Image (cartoon, rainbow, N blue to C red; front, side, top):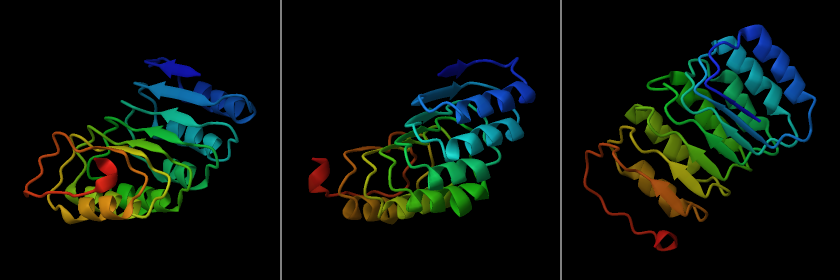
Length: 187
């Protein structure tokens, strides 16, 4: 199901669509990109997907996310979600990212691909993300480009403990320290 660049869809329509998605057990992919919806509408959509049995791919890229509670619940409780794309979602320094979302990621046991690129995440948020994912045993691909990284140790922790990550994108992350990571499984 693809809903992209639909600025004219209002909260009531999104809530009705969320309920329809909730009752449809054949949808596996939901692309919800570049929509300018309210926090309430996006939260309702995430809530509907939290217990959805077949959604494996959810793309919220270029959708402003100011309220992360229901997205965090989706990540924590979904038994089917394997791909989550949050590219350029205006997350920045949101404390809910490190206090709720990262904690949910550490509990999740299904996610294989996560993209949080282009969010200009704060160093604190990046550190928490890497530390929470350092013991995640299903994540294969992590894209964190265009976020601010100051310290190498959380990245090193992630790579040294994760045996699944085969693709890690740190491009344009303004890394302020020089470091070398030796990870045989990434070579």
